[in-house]
Image 1 (cartoon, rainbow, N blue to C red):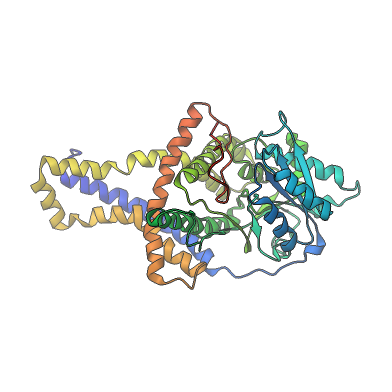
Image 2 (cartoon, rainbow, N blue to C red):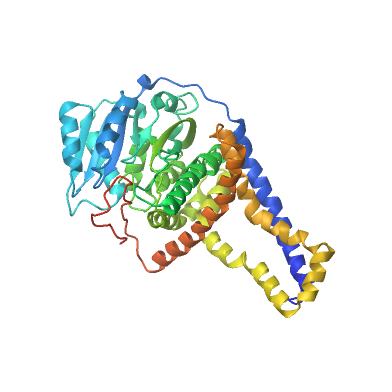
Length: 458
């Protein structure tokens, strides 16, 4: 069978479409059902624990003052530890003034050459400061550390929900991740001073990030409860101090220097025998990026971080603390950036071959399509695109019920286009890995001025 033979090409479409269609439909069903059927859990009592919130910062004067005020208001039981990673702006001074007025606010200052070594190193400094501050007889199993970005805005009462019976109420739970939402998802002008076209693009990009985190990511986290592979994120993660102590005893420090230190921490907790949990009953809000360049830089760092964590696949395979289903789920997740590289090469091949066949013999292609063969390329397209379009209405049903149905369909139609950028991200991450570039660059906040120097990727 020639690759340019229309009948052969349509058979190829049929085989690939049928196999992938069945697999993806089962996968989609397994994700969507827990999300739509979820029932709220009972809150616990935050008073049963001692809370300490870590906020690693570098040049965050635009947001850090409001973040500290919000954390103290939303989590009044908690101490806030801000790590100034040798900022060149007024970040440290803003926090120092807040600490003078509030004994529950603490400033941890770092200076080069021991600073600007990544988020993991900054969090380890906060861990050391907390351990020195706590009394020797502290019950470290009831001390909980939360990690928030400098723009993190947790919901009021979130600590009671994180302390719930299905969260830290279970002694085997070492880490809890709460849902992440985009703070500016309804902002009509996410790019100040931009024209109509750039504003529309920025609004759509922000909405897609909110859909991604509250739709597929939240659904995946809920489904991971079955495989015991819930992952921790960089914003809105909570970890038992006793669990951090275990990692420090085993590895010398709780956090490592990888680009995806949050995911790596959760993975280390699993390998150490702790269980991670996802709490969808509360959330943290953060700013979505409305600029494509900053978005791609951030996602490239994330994809490269996943590539770095692929080295843990042998340890996951050997572990008797991760179930077989968890092995499959983690293996798929860690291979995902590489699979996207492969997919970028394979998905265009059948349409390209069909186009070449059309150029060679258009009558034969038309005859094959008119005899029912047109259903096969349609199936191929539905499998490749349609499954992602469904996330628009699912997102509306689960998260934004006041939005119009057809608006949600539009969001769903935009979502596959948004995901195409992740293929480019995987290629950029692979290129950086091959070239040995592992430096970390801070993502500029939307509130930061655009006149200052822009941090470049190392």
